[in-house]
Structure formats: C-alpha cells, structure tokens
Length: 215
Ligand code: AMP
Image (cartoon, rainbow, N blue to C red; front, side):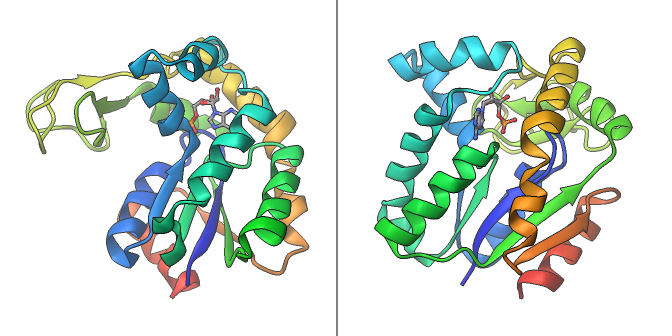
C-alpha cells in the first residue's frame, strides 16, 4: 500500500513524479494546486477566493485547503492508495492531516518523500515550464520540449505558462516555501517514514530512486 506525502519546493518535480507513480502503481494523485486551478477555471466561489492568493504566490488559508483535502480523501478511489502532492504545506495542515487520518479515516501514511532541488535550479525549471491547457500534460521549453512549439504532443491542445510561473512570483513562492513549508521535514522526520530523495537530473533516474523506496 502506498499512502504518500510528497514534499519539496515548487518545481521540485512532484507533479511529474506523481504522474509516473499513478501509472506504475494505480494509485490516485491529490494535487491541491490542480484542484485550485480547476476551481479558478470554473469560476466557482472557491476559485475566486483562491485566485487572489495564487497569483501573488501566497498560500490559500489553511481551513480552506484542509476542507478540500478531507472531502477528497473520503472518496472511494483513495482506498487503494494516494499521493498528496502539494499538501500539507504548513504545520497546521500537517496536524490536521494527522488528525483526519487517525480519527476519521483510519488510514496511515506509508511514505513521506522529500524531493531536494536547490533554489538555483528551481528558477530555470519553473520559468521554462509549460502545460497543456486541455489535458494538463507537462513540458519544459529546454528539458522536455514538445515536438511542435506551443502544441501538446498528446492531445494537440495549446501549451500555456502558469500565471504564477513568472520570475517575481516564483521568488515569492520560494520564500513562502522556506518560511512555512520546509519545516515539515523536521515534523515528519520523527515518523520513521521520511525519505530524502535527490530531485536533480533525469526524471526517469529520479523515478528509479523513488521506486527503490516504495517497492
Ligand atoms: P502548486 O501547484 O502546488 O505549486 O500550488 C499552486 C498554488 O496553489 C500555491 O502557490 C498556493 O497559492 C496554492 N496552494 C496549493 N496547495 C496549497 C496548500 N496545501 N496550502 C495553501 N495553498 C496551496
């Protein structure tokens, strides 16, 4: 069973590696960032609220995010295993997660994987990141370019840059990461299920490192 938390700075490759884990192990990915971006797209109340924070590189309030994750984890497809990608990001979120897993869902986390990538690399990764506006597939203008510029290899959709992948916003997101999220490493180190993984290099090599831990 894999019930995983993926830690790491924005641009560490959590989304890319989650996609590979989903394919290999048939588990579900719960990306709070994706859920919020879909809400923004749909124009819902949640989307309107979240957009303000996201565009500024700030965190959406804990109570909002915790509610979203709680209802997602209650769905049946999580019973075969899940990856939390981008949650928790603060100590109160981690505490709320512990509480809901133990007292309401009766589920235990099996792996906390922390993807390590130095800040210098993050900027290059995020400014070059593009994703398909239709199917969400991920590309990079230098490291993983699409065959036709601006067009998705998989579905032919248009490739776009995320609103928050602009240099100024990336700096803010990294700052938020160091101030509020990095301390989760110490929080989870006590669990005995915490693993540091080198997040630099070829995505396939990084995936092998992760598979060594979870298999
Ligand atoms: P991500 O795609 O994980 O980089 O998330 C994009 C943005 O969504 C973040 O910069 C936050 O504004 C918001 N967000 C995603 N997950 C969380 C979370 N767990 N707590 C607070 N805000 C979040």
